[in-house]
Image (cartoon, rainbow, N blue to C red):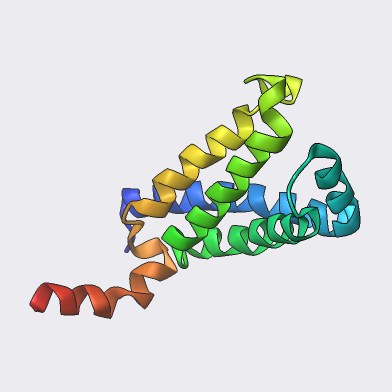
Length: 141
């Protein structure tokens, strides 16, 4: 039913989605959005109230959508923007290595998002079924 490529992309989306869900959940329930906002403000993030809401919800909902394989290009762009912000405001000054608080993890996540967001994800993604009719129509025209 699903080829190796579809299963591989699903597993990559599952791993990335889980990471983002957990980070969104941490912001939402463990730390609390108000504490995330205070942290963002201390780091000099512009509009820390909006940025905290954006980061929390794009990570949590975006992670779910990654696992489902739904709206992959859009979700990937939104999460990449989130990771660029994380690199710029939280990680850049700490260098590359993750164990020093560096940008290694968000950079790796960007690489994964580029791969799963812009490649044809195959039959194990909701996008395959949601946009199938549009692809067939485009080929016929």
